[in-house]
Amino acid sequence: MKSTLENISAVSLFVEDLDAAKTFYQQVFGVPVIFEDESSAAVGFANVIVNLLRVENAQELVEPGVVARRDSGSRFQLSIWVDDVDEVCRELHKRGMPSLSGPRDRPWGMRTANFVDPGGHSWEIAQKIASK
Image (tube, rainbow, N blue to C red; front, side, top):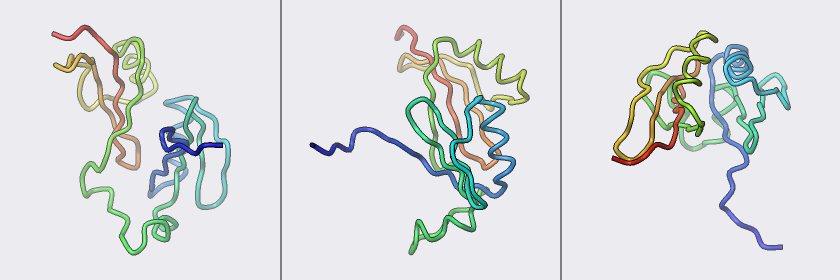
């Protein structure tokens, strides 16, 4: 069997408030919790697991580095491709999630909108459109 590194199976996000993060992912994305203990909650998207890990338990994963503070600024962005950005944004607003920017058309052929979760992680909703 050949091993490949082309499929991401899980992403761990370090969070200050595990309960708030778990609730956010369940309510906004409608994804189930597939594993949970006192330090983490893993939610299952179609092709990837997002592991929500308490900041105080994350340090051992990144040593000798440090876990950056939430107010340090954006560190990365996660994207979900959808068929209709405007429709998804309307649904997210109904769920209490305001967008930070967008929806707007980008010169690289995508229509995007951005928002953040309670831990400060940036999310993008993106739709392929005709390039200009």
